[in-house]
Image (cartoon, rainbow, N blue to C red; front, side, top):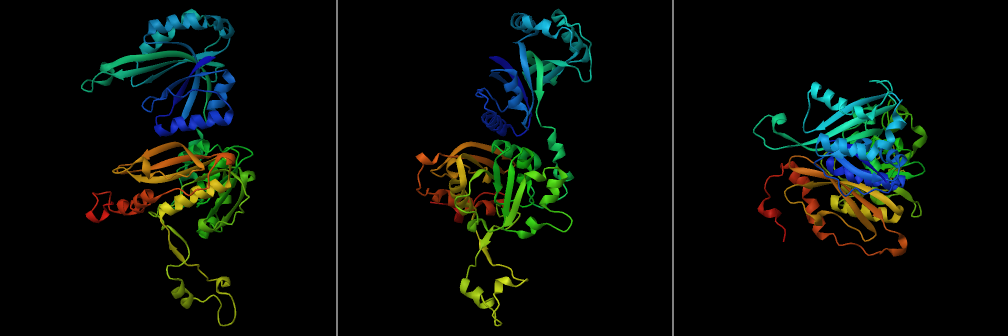
Amino acid sequence: MTQYLILLAQKHESFRKAELEALAELEHVSVDLSSHDDNVPLLYVTLDCEEDARKLIRRSILARSIFEIWGRGNSLNTLHEDVKQRTRHLWQKYKHVSFKFDIISYQGSRTKEEQREIIESFSYVDFDGPIRMRNPEEIFTIIEEYTCTTDFVPRNESRELNDICFGRFIASSQRDIIDQYDLKKRKYIGTTSFDAELALISSNIGLAAPGKIVYDPFAGTGSFLVAASHFGAMAIGSDIDGRQIRGTAKSNITTNYSQYNITSQFLDTFVCDFTHNPLRPSFRLDAIICDPPYGVREGLKVLGSRNAERYAEKLPTRLENGDLSHLRPDYIPPKKPYHFDALLDDLLFFAADHLVDNGRLCCWMPTANEDYGELHIPMHPDMNLISNCVQEFSKWSRRLLTYTRRPRDCTSSLRPITKSTRIYKEQFRDKYFRGFSKAKDHESVE
């Protein structure tokens, strides 16, 4: 067993552990991530071999790189002692390779002169190979972590070295693809197109991979479909709004697939009301990854009419000439309001019916910061909630809820009780538009 250091991105901190756990499961890598701290971008782990380190990091979005630890201490002197004791037998192996040294500091910095002195202090490893600043065979890195002792003096004057390690660079992640999939560069987008980085993270947590079928029932312009297909999954999507599915004569979802050269991973899209989904009951999915409509940017509706009799009088099923009204080219099906709580409830039941055993449902849910509680998270007896990652805004947040489908030989068909969830979620849209100001008397719930 060898110790490694994962250098994490300082963004979406609550998602980092969930993503790494998902990738470890996907790559069959045994790793303990219990030491992860949302406040620190350095994560020490122990792995069986270098190949496991490469597999764990190779498709991560929220990790940057991984290093094999050659030594660690709380000062430069203790670091040198640990390097000599731990890795002396490795020096000869890298004696003649080209190399370079880097220094990474967290919550602190060093001058060029200090960096040079630190690098030269490792002269005892006696590397004879050429120093190459571009494309060296090996990169050796000193990584420092500082803590600030006070907020009232300049940062570098109040810093205190907390941890320092010396490691050999092993591999980088796929974080650089965020720019490639940036919505600003995408040919087909809409008002509800989902952020590319979070779509890729959602696909990692959803275990999108070659040989798997991923479905987005609220596909829109296909953000999650494209992200899942980037990782090799076959993608299928649907939406009640046929205009977004069809796109225009110049651009649509398939345009995006062509842009990223992943058209072979696209199965199809279709127009449907999620509550009347045409997928046959026996159709199995490996993952469902979606961002259900909150009823904020777009109205939340399903097919139907508030007053079926009045609608039938306005547009009868069969016209005077005998034609069916829904076959007319100008026919617009009626829609009725649909509460977000009912949508999540139906989504959980759909996932329980269609996911393979241990398949994953990753769905986003908005919450108001002022009154969020665990009871607001929808549950289902056949679905196990494994992570709850949050992206915070000023007065509200959106959460990526990840469930796994329990094996069918140990599940229940009982319908969960969702009354408290319904009351909470029905108010989110109202709270959003009033700016999350204090609730009025009529909003109190017994």
